Amino acid sequence: NCSADLNATTCLNALRDSFDEWEAATCSALNFTELGFSNNLQNTAIGYSSNDKNELAFIENSQWTYGTYTLGVTAPIFYDTGQIIEADIAFNGYLQTWSTNGTDYSTDVQNVAVHEIGHFFGLQHVLGGYAANNPPTMAPTADPFMASQTPEQDDLDGACFLYPQGVWTCGSDADCPLV
Image (cartoon, rainbow, N blue to C red; front, side, top):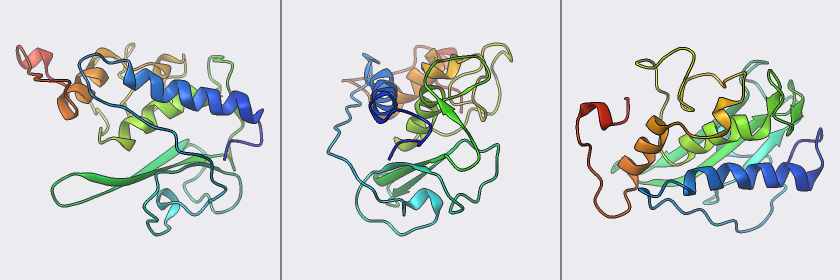
């Protein structure tokens, strides 16, 4: 489900573009497949049980309990080996107004979705070690100037570390993703 604030096609294309941003990392074997549509709003990101499907939904009612300033939540479910077996993403459609125009300080779908998709496949927040004026996409907050619409090099390094295309190693500590 997309946000009621947006044209459904425009919203879906912004979500698809967000997945494409991660697939563009040539050092990573990440590949996502869209399998269809669902009206299910009971996903794991807002406290419901697993259903063996990876689902994205804009929660537009009081089921959203994370407050105004949490824009999205991703809930990966994984085996003790670390293998992710399901991941759902919920977007705050209840207390936010969404856009797809990339205007600074807006709640832009791609600016939030690229970050949440990072969690979807296993990346965590980068809590430090970066310039304040150039945060990675996986920083704890979405960049108000839309820099979160595309993964930064550190984010791509994380994707390549977790899902390498062939053999991927760090040439030095500086080449490894921030943890």
